[in-house]
Length: 261
Image (tube, rainbow, N blue to C red; front, top):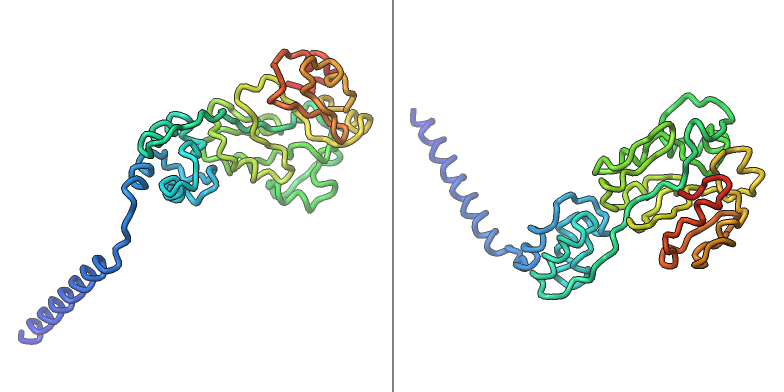
């Protein structure tokens, strides 16, 4: 019986010592947190997507509190959250243009040709090790195995008939799909953009036409007919300057391959 009592006393003493030690350590090594940082963190959506360029919402909150990041730097929260954070920080929030991800390819199973049937690991990154970078004849086209789908934390992108398609209403412009695509087919574009070049091929026209029914052939008809001078042709591929584009839609009507959507 005395042994049990002794053991109980020893455990109690050890527990008391550890409790006192942790209490003193907590006071001695306490890290002061800026109240504004805590307030900002409470306003952030908590997705920790990294789209702001910081290591999660806590990293962004700390940067905003220190003045190292804009109050509207959270792409998920958008202007609504930016305005609330601006009130906490006592500053004015600039209105940021809403952006969304866009896949620069329409080469689905019905519109693009294939060189061979592929059977293997369904991972876009792995296809860089197979002939021609994938079974599709266009080496610039979407591979359709959904690395971008897996990377999106908002279920805003899906593979439809062999090509990735973004739901612009669900997209939060975090940029994870952009980083996940090994073909660099995805970019962030203005939500209000009404004319987009849905192609990434830098091949000459005859090569493109053999590979895809809707690829840009660099014919310059869109450029020549654009009244705002918003289109340039680089590497046989049309590119739209969204700052100049007025959304008239003339380029879309003039494109013979329907590469502008």
